Image 1 (cartoon, rainbow, N blue to C red):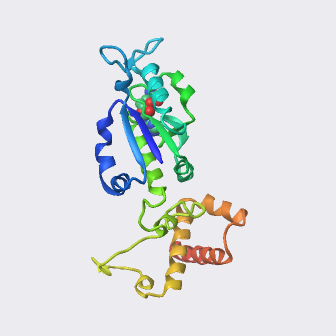
Image 2: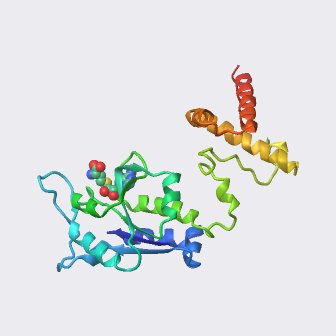
Image 3: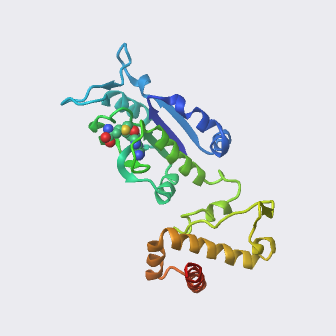
Amino acid sequence: MRIDVLTVLPGLFDCFLREGVIGKALERGLVSVNVYNIRDFTTDKHRVVDDVPYGGGPGMVLKPEPIFRAYEKLSKEGPKPFVILTEPWGEKFNQEMALEFSKLPRLLIICGRYEGVDERVKKLVDREVSIGDYVLTGGELPAMVIMDAVIRLTPGVLGNRESLEADSFMDRGLMGYPNYTRPAEFKGMRVPEVLLSGHHAKIERWRKKESLRKTLKRAPELIEKLKREGKLTEEELKLLKEIEQEENIGNG
Ligand code: SAH
C-alpha cells in the first residue's frame, strides 16, 4: 500500500513515521508513506499556498491550484489514489472505515489548514473524514490518526495476527477485554485468579464475558442490536444473563 499526504507542515510527520510500529512497518517496506509539501507545487515566486476568503471574514483559505497540481502529478504515478480530505464536519472516522481503507492500494490524504481548503478541491475528493466533533488547527493530526489505524491493519504490520482479532471493535463491534501483566499483586490489587490458572477455556470464557460487560456498560444499544439481529451465540447470551444478575446485585 502507498499513502501520499499533502500538507503545508510536512515536519509534523517526522516522529510519527520514524517511531514504533509505524516506523517499523515503513522500514520493512510493508507500506510506503510520502509526505509532500503543498508549497512545492506552487509556481509563483513567493510560493503562496493560501489567500483571503472571497466575501471577507477572518483567516486564510488554502488555494486550489497547488493542490490540483500535486494531485495531477502524483496520480500519474501508479494506480489512481483514493482521496481523503480531513474535515471537521466530514464523515466520522471509525474502525470499519479504517478496515475499508486498509484494503485499498493507494490513498492520498489532503490536510486542511487555516480556515480550510477552497471548496473546489472537493472535486478531487472521494471521502471527507472527521476524527471527532472538535476543531483542530490542521488536518495533520487527523491524517496521522487515519494512517495509524490503517497501517496497523495492513497484513504483516502487527507481529501477531491474533492481536488484531482481540482488538476492540473488530469482533462485531464488541469492546476489548481488560489486560493485566506482572506483578500478580500490586498495591493490594490482585490480577483476577482465572488469568493465573493457565486454564485456557476458562480464560477465554472470562475474556468474552468481560468484553461483553464493558460493551453492555458503554454501548448497551450495540448489545441490543446484536441480540435483535441474532448475532450473539448461546454462550454469549448466557454470559449476558450472568452479567446482568451480577450487576444488579452490585447495584443493590
Ligand atoms: N474554519 C473551519 C475549521 C478549519 S480547521 C470550520 O469552521 O469548521 C482547519 C483544518 O483542520 C480543516 O480544514 C481540516 O482539514 C482540519 N481539521 C480540523 N479539525 C478536524 C477534525 N476534527 N477532523 C478532521 N480534520 C480536522
